[in-house]
Length: 268
Image 1: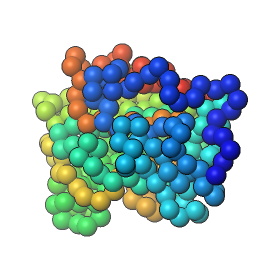
Image 2 (image 1 turned 45 degrees about the vertical axis):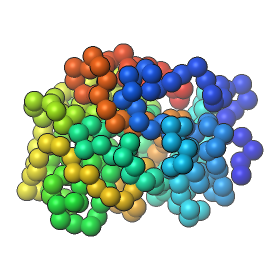
Image 3 (image 1 turned 90 degrees about the vertical axis):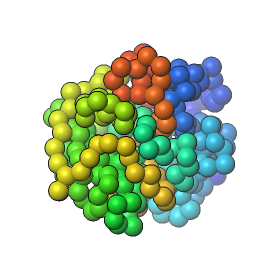
Image 4 (image 1 turned 180 degrees about the vertical axis):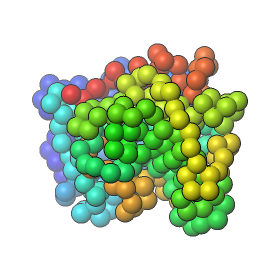
């Protein structure tokens, strides 16, 4: 067990910040690296506490697959991924069929397709739902592989060169099945700013209507347990969304709520 996850003088959990309040209830899971229940065992993080559901942390039981503990330059705890990942059960609060999303600080240093946070079910058939925010070269994408199997589905893509390598980025993906158009249903924000997205088919195409509710686990740091691993950093907080806040006109959050999440414990 590591003696400390944060540098001396850094702000420790708990703090005067509540992501559920600032997002009007849209945040349904809050994984906090500085929470007292978060554990570093052996080579890295073996358990990351969900502040809102302590019974379902994000875990890694295999020492070689644990993301390593590091500190940002301003002393905040961060996870370093290199062919490592965490899993967490898809509880009802984390796996909505009509509203879903994720948010967090990420800094990637590798190349090629790299997974961020993924809902993944590899069983095949109509239940093989995959929602996979990816960093692809200099582009941030969300692959919406739903109602179909394999690599078939729909792809929402942010502008080219919007995600620079070796730079801390605050990313959100916000999915609202009730939106009238694809652009209403899918929002990617970078640095708190919603992007203008392009939509294309992946394989034979698919739909961006209400998500299938898959079973299994959510993956942090890749797509599945071995595919598209992240080479880079995540932390000190990771949020999941399960509903839409009042006043949101695009995606699940208001611009002010995105900035509030971004500005809390910002790594440098």
